[in-house]
Image 1: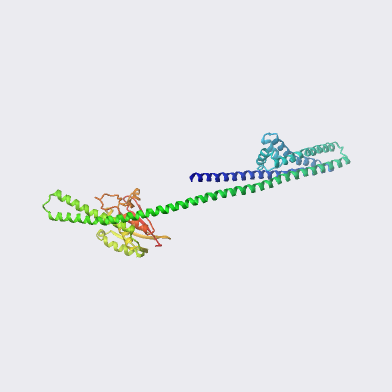
Image 2: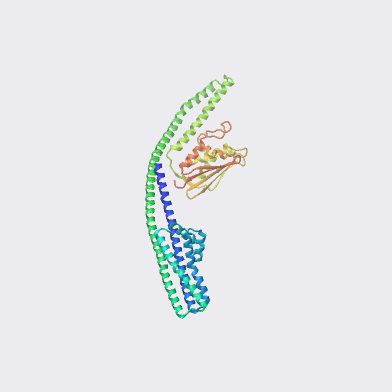
Length: 465
């Protein structure tokens, strides 16, 4: 499958490249042909001006027209120099100077030289070059007649009969050259039209080939995506079923562990009470460890049950006044807030659509952590809310120990703790529950914190529950 895609993409690239190259060189040929046609206009003008000045010189014998004739005749003579230089494979600079003398635009000359050198034997170009070359003897005759006229005028021997003869010869040559110039333009114009037609046909064929290839590639890609999507749906269903089974197992296992744990705790209590004063210090220590272990195990099991309930219990949403939720939670931390500057501060908290039990659990876990991981300073917890177009965003800011950035992701993973149980008791499940609750409310949870400078936990809930 991958090999087929690679071949299709390679073919698309090749056709696209061929299309670009074809258009580039076709435009280059057409541009050069246009330059030759423009050059022919200057050639024709120079020839016609030379004819007019020479006839006027014959009639008036004014030397000024002789100079004007020589200046005008250099235009077609310059083009002839360029053609002969290219045919004899002389240096491009000689041809360039000839074209400049022929009044061709300097920017067009590189394309004119390129077209002549690469296509002078091509039928369309050879025909135009042959017409161009056949005009050169006529230009030379013009030059010869001009020199004869000038010589006789200078010698004072030009008669009226000779003036008539020269005038007829000049007009005849001009007429022949005009025909050549028209044929030259027609040959290149016909070529340009043919190339334009061929270009249109080639473009249509290449574009159709490109579109059909892209269509084949698109169909294959869409089919692959459909197949992948179907596979993902099956895999997601299997994963969801597995997760549900795992959550149900966790809930059942945690619930079933409660009974033997209560039995162990009860018998250890009875043992401690019955033999109080009869056991040595080491035995008392062992009993204490056993009782403490059962208490921590009970806490862990209860947290696991809460986590499982958060995941598998059907959730109902209704209007929840978050200010009332915080007010109720404050009552649970009365003893922690006895210090004069301690407090849980909030105002203007919104009424949102959520599950009241889970919202209470989320806030309680965050506030409990803020109280647990405090510094020597009195705990100060600030709660605020802002809104976006789609979500409510709550923040819980404390002045506690702070968290290093490298642990920002770790703390939301179940059973992950940053402190030992000897310094700060806990199971490492609280923030995992917070994350699960935020997700079930169409949001997420994150934090900003610096070690030793407190933490701010943010969580969002959707407005469209």
